Length: 102
Image 1 (cartoon, rainbow, N blue to C red):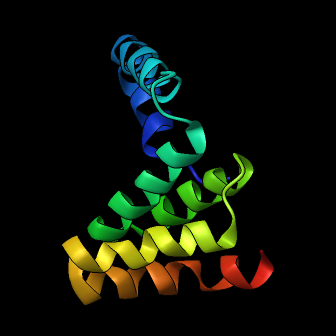
Image 2 (tube, rainbow, N blue to C red; image 1 turned 45 degrees about the vertical axis):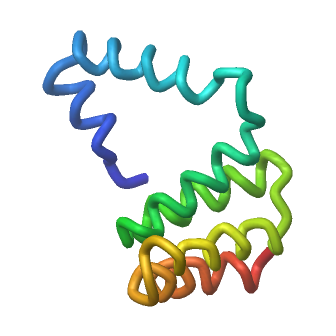
Image 3 (tube, one colour; image 1 turned 60 degrees about the vertical axis):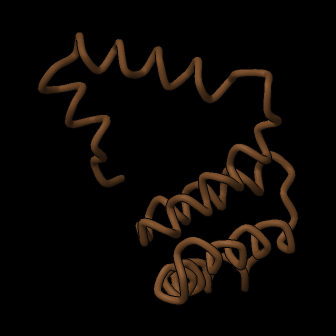
C-alpha cells in the first residue's frame, strides 16, 4: 500500500500526528451528523478540490456507511453549483470505475 500524508507525518512528527489524529477522530465521530452524510459532504468537497484519491476514498466510505449509488451521484451532481463543470468532471472521471463496480 502506498504511503499517505498521515504515515509521513507520523514518522516526521509523531507528537503532532497524535494530536491531529485525536482531533480528526473526534470530528468524524461527532453525533450531530450521520456518518453517511458526513462522507457524502466529503465527496462533494473533495470533488470541488479535484482530489481524485480523496474523492474515491470518501465515496467508498459513504458506501460503507450506507450511501446508495444515487446518493453518491447526487453529491457529485451538487458540485456543479459551487465547483462548476471542471469539479464535476474530475469527480465523474475519478468515480467511473467505482460506479461501474457498485
